[in-house]
Image 1 (cartoon, rainbow, N blue to C red):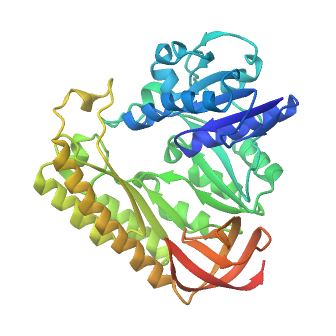
Image 2: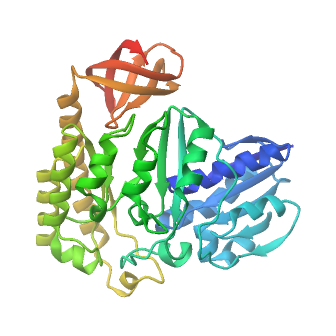
Image 3: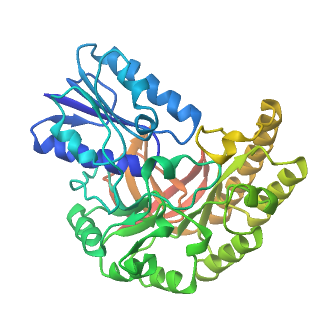
Length: 413
């Protein structure tokens, strides 16, 4: 029997999907994460934006084109938010939400909706399957922040964290070249009084490059950065969520920091990791964002000199505080987004140029258009001519290429 686990959305979804892949393999299925012919499809949905929810619904039609007779199971945030809209879809057999995803393995032959109660403690899933050289390890779920634009706390529940022992055991068992610690709110990690710094200190002897998923400004501290310095191998890349560089907009979004506090966190990172890649998310066109607020945000992003920016227009989500606000004109939002995307390309190019003729450790993960590709620790996509074995290499970045840089191998690590 062939199964496909098709994933939309965040790295937490990818991590949970990888757990389902491992569980299906243990049941005897041949499993893929690519959209291809199969007897069973599990669609792991996303609801972070209206567009993500739309793509989640469209995924049903896409899998039915592969095999109209296949069993289809829909799970994740979009189906938690509106299970009926998926149950009504022709060909869908099972609908579940965000909780107890491992129970999907017991529902393969069932029919109906199975929306389980919200979890109050961290729920262990089957050991993730490492798809490439990089493994994702989920350490936390849920969120207590209730940013005014975000639906996720209502779908994922309150914050809960996984034990350091369980996390470390999975990292060791996966034995990947790189391990990405991922979560719904990584910065909220706290297991029985042990915070993110304590977790990092417990991982000081693991033999893998540790990389963070998305962080919040409030977690950046001297203690955390020292703990990261003491790891055997740390990828100096900090995806530090911003959302806006305007204090007015941050307050309206219920983000609990100011632009100055955010900048202080960036400066602290650069004190310990001068060449760190610092990337971010920015929402453009929040309903209360004036032209002056946007200019403040634009100038702040320019001042910080991010290595990359994920910018997108505000998307009203029913059930959030911001949904009740009057949305800005679409042309205004698109114009602001285009300006920010132009700045993003300038900043990204500048960061890559700054790293040319430097030595970097790169983990090769895939082969693409005649090049072996991977990422440096500070998250520059690297291209090496020809097909080489996956693994870790010391390279010299030689020139800009596509959205990254060409490199020459100096040694295999």
